[in-house]
Length: 158
Image 1: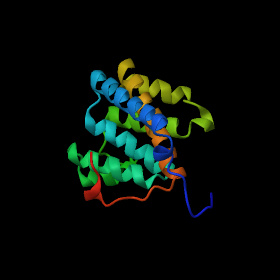
Image 2: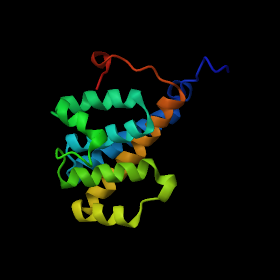
Image 3: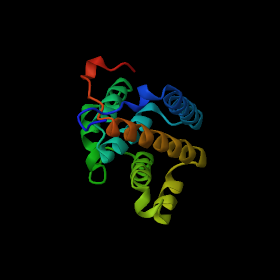
Image 4: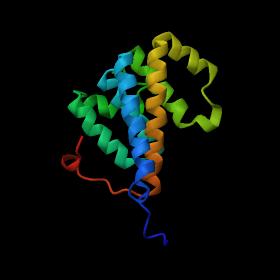
């Protein structure tokens, strides 16, 4: 088990990966039921993946975002969302939540973030976005630990 060879966890333990994939599908249903549009779902997953440094997941969710109609300009604004006028109130709350979940070990979900998110999102939207963030952070860790190669955008099946 040398450093040059990384174990591909999703291929090495298919039942565990299938369970995580099942979670992702369930979370997708929660998001749909809560009225989370594909644009918002992809924006938060891209942001969490950027914060984690997961190039693989950024690539996958960029393709999904493009297919959902997110523009290149909007994608470019995600890392600077606080300074950008591109995102609406709900999206800004969701991006704030993405940061809190991604860096949860630093301060949990701070009260001010929880309150701000609660003013912009319904309880069902909060629940769905929280599960989306739990899921993407898990996928980020698999891809980063395994140093998954980043495929060309056109090679990604979504």
